[in-house]
Amino acid sequence: MKALHDVLTQVEQFAAEELRPRAGEFEAQQEIPQDVIISLAKHGVLGATIPVEYGGLALDAIDYGNLTETVGKACNSVRELLTVHVSLVGESIKRWGSEEQKRYWLPRMATGEILAAFALTEPEVGSDAKGIGTSYRQEGNRFILNGRKKWISFGGIADLFLVFASRGEEMTAFLVESSMAGVSTTKMSNLLASSSSHLAEIHLQDVEVPLENVLSRVGGGFAYVVNTALDHGRYSIAWSGVAIAQEALDGMVTYGRTRKQGGRVICEYAEVQKMIADASANLHAARALCVAAGLKRRDKHPDAIIETTIAKYFSSKMAMKVATDAVQVFGGNGFSRDYPVERLFREAKVLEIIEGTSQVLQPVIAQHALRTCYRKGWWSEP
Amino acid sequence: MVEATLEQIVYTYIAEHVDDEFDYDTEIFEEGFVNSLFAIQLMTFLEKEFAIKITMDDLDMENYKSVNAIGEFVRRWRERNVR
Ligand SMILES: Cc1cc2nc3c(=O)[nH]c(=O)nc-3n(C[C@H](O)[C@H](O)[C@H](O)COP(=O)(O)OP(=O)(O)OC[C@H]3O[C@@H](n4cnc5c(N)ncnc54)[C@H](O)[C@@H]3O)c2cc1C
Image 1 (cartoon, protein in one colour):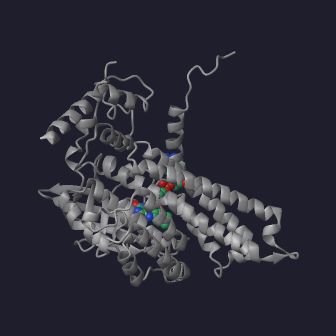
Image 2 (image 1 turned 30 degrees about the horizontal axis):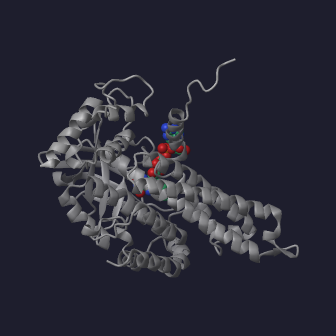
Image 3 (image 1 turned 45 degrees about the vertical axis):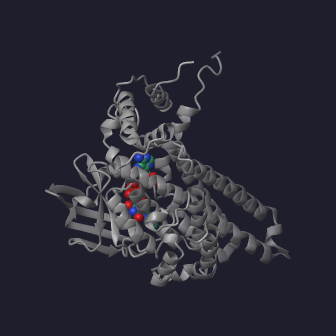
């Protein structure tokens, strides 16, 4: 195996040479070209956290966070592939897959032979994931799935879908292959951003899934798989916020130091400096939260889940704010596709929506604070 | 000093996450004391605290329903894996 440092350096170079200059073009063409996916696989990115014995790089949480930032800074849609393929599906199989499932799927995912997507959301069900309508029934050793999934990143090109379906109160996770009879997809377009993320609807019509394709156990779809997957997804999104904000700040500073108005470069104006200072301080704070969550994850600390939730919540809002200010610093040029900040501005928004909207995460964070910060008898009532 | 029993350790950890009174037999998930996200957190805690590895075969919710159930589960796991 290549030394980890070499891998990360090579990915950085690849991102700088092949992703950043082409990110706008991918969006315009509404696809990530095959050559890019092949290169990602060659660099080991598609098997980033998959254990070495299954052909992956076995990156720990901190290294994976750094990798996510490197890729996300250069191209948000390629980063989305990492989020769904590695964080949502790869980590779920790694955690809850049987040995046979791990041996079958993970090496293929690491080489990019198989691309994976995460299929939870439906046209009528998003935040309230427990209420999904995609259904299954059991017939002997097979399950028959029916329903519709929407907003599935890379659904248009994935070979494997981690599909969640319900039977009454019970929810189960299934490894559904796109080649199975009854599976079809419809590309989604006219989106604010993520046009190259191959978003699709997935239609499941009497799809027969064998028992060995159940991930974890029948009925364990929500408590185990959804919760594990979204926890990993939130960690990925937290770093994605750092990525977008860093890229936006780099843009803000570079533009601010070169654009002249009133005989001065605009970064000399206090009002512009305020935006740069706020962006820089908030970015540092978000990165610190991501690193703190990463260390807890690496240490398998039970608080890793809440720390990750806080990092995702803060970082996604922070990215939106920094990207908004970046557009402001660019003035009219911030509106133009000739400059990258308008794309960052559009891309930042989705971070506040996916893997738990900000509104859905707020009570989770509040509950944690209400429990841990209560000091009985701190003062006596007058 | 008497060493805390397995159940005491588990109880103390869960109590940090629950406001209401409960005992070793209270079904913490069933009675809504904690939400399902806590299941993953609890498993992480058990793995770290008692040096066990929860796999797919251990996913029966019965194993985690109460402090006593968790205590029994951890002991069974250890016995199974010592051999
Ligand atoms: C670009 C993109 C990529 C995506 N990729 C995937 C993917 O790969 N796989 C997948 O399964 N899904 C994916 N999604 C779907 C995404 O996870 C959902 O959009 C998200 O969970 C929100 O659900 P919703 O859109 O149905 O909004 P709703 O749940 O209808 O929410 C609408 C509004 O109501 C608020 N709200 C809802 N419930 C509550 C509540 N309980 N308390 C307070 N406020 C509430 C929300 O915060 C939001 O502001 C993607 C979405 C986008 C935009």
